[in-house]
Image 1 (tube, rainbow, N blue to C red):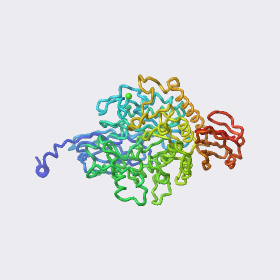
Image 2 (image 1 turned 135 degrees about the vertical axis):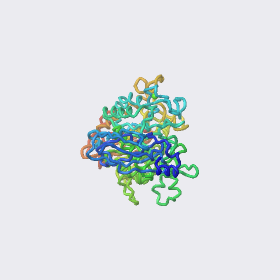
Image 3 (image 1 turned 60 degrees about the vertical axis):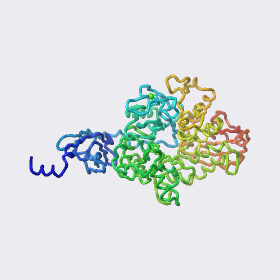
Image 4 (image 1 turned 30 degrees about the vertical axis):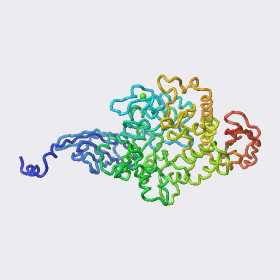
Length: 614
Ligand code: CA
């Protein structure tokens, strides 16, 4: 033994030399060439991997910096991709004491042609929101998968019901035929939690589709099938929190990877603290750093490695699955400097892409703060192109259910829209009557189908991007209000052996067919209406429970009259002259009948009349 080695052995305990070094995973698992940003940061995980020496064998793939963190089982490699490199596969070699302890064939794929130019969802689209566990079970064999903690139990409203990607794929023709143009699927990534995992918001692997839904390849193929039908795919993403069973929770890269508290501290859910000029530091901190739930650890996006990890994850899925849009969960709950950086980087790579953030507040000013290019006093720019119109959702829930008053009833819709001056871009706001987190609209209206039709007519003709929640077309309800599970019931006919199949007319009741046909007609009509997609909006102060608005452009105009009274009303339209004077007649697009006399219109109670003007 060499004398120096002997000294070394005396200084360092022998165990360090017998320590196991191994490579377990690298994320992102592969990447692409041809991005504007040629930097990439790889998370490398494995037992004592930070003690290994690293080499690569391709000149187009350069390790600029090796970052070590508190936990020796992690490395973060800063990579620069040489502009000349195209479709590279490099071997990343990990060695310990000259012994190979890990070898990873890292692939840089060529981007699909036109990838950067993809056009995100817009007001010319209608988004169909569905929950994958609850839409259709196309493959019984994946209901239970070895290694997945929660097993299927369709009798439990909060359990897993077995829906999957195959089930969605089987019904793409149904979705297309219905008339929507985009599909937002609630999160599909692995949620290997012991219970209450079906909703998908407790992600345990950011690079893997949950095997109970299918594989990454299945998701990619689903995207292709959606595109083949001329529709768009919107992915639901979550970066405020992960699942408590996420693989890294057992061995965190550093103590500040998640926001830790001395004792479990829940967020106060007061998103308004982000914009409140009088917010206390304590409240603001609890909002952003508190945990969404004890099973949902709060990620610390101020940690630069967490930040890069999440941003790259989004870009990876856009490129891999051919996404047309992202819906970002609990958007204001993350550190807002990071989410702005996320929006900026995605927009840099995909200038026409669209992202909508869940900024759940009930007044336009608070929501508007979060839309890209808002004129905020603190100069914050979110780089988030779209937000959900929660104020309008709130108004829609009340508008048809209460007596008409100075500031109640249908005036609520008018009132919210009149505050659109708050928004940087009111046409890029997602409008909805309900979603997976709230009571189904029909429940809030005590099953009054007339009110559902009014709400749908409004959502599909007002400014913005409509979103419809799956099952609305067949009058799905929660039945009772016990828990979220019932807001997300199984689509009838989506499961083998269901006693009826509401995907086909023969399987629906008369009322369900009536609703389906109503929406189908509106959706097909809306597809061709530039005036609804991009036209201006003009409305008149509601009077006597009548709310009238117009969508118009240089060439055409559509008039919508909502009668919130129980009784039929005859409406003298002289008040609307500034728009109507240009037109002589029209067509009621619901009944298909001509409207010969625009001066006097008869609108039945609790009805929206939509008139295409000529
Ligand atoms: Ca299944």
